Length: 102
Image 1 (cartoon, rainbow, N blue to C red):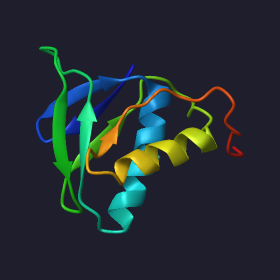
Image 2 (image 1 turned 180 degrees about the vertical axis):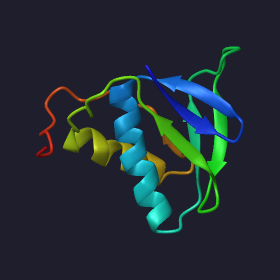
Image 3 (image 1 turned 120 degrees about the horizontal axis):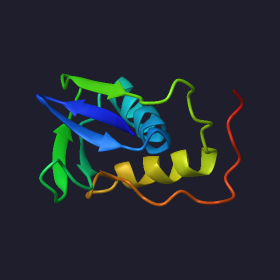
Image 4 (image 1 turned 30 degrees about the vertical axis):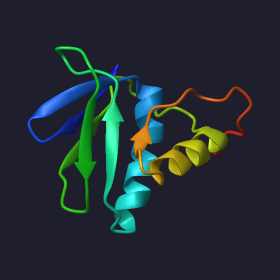
């Protein structure tokens, strides 16, 4: 289980999900876009929504020592969701995505 660090708080996210979120988040930040990110739960439970922009300090911390293979279809779906008014949400990974080359 990895973690995403935002401000002074860390939120647990499975490594596989974290790798996909990191790609989408960094892509949006490279384009200087501001967007919201909703994560399922914090240490006290419940969903948390954050506004992320170019000046936001984030940390992506992985528990495993090998990066997960990325699912191209899931990346596209997450990027699409991130561009909506509701912002980036963790959605279920599609089964038949074409993996990106390692």
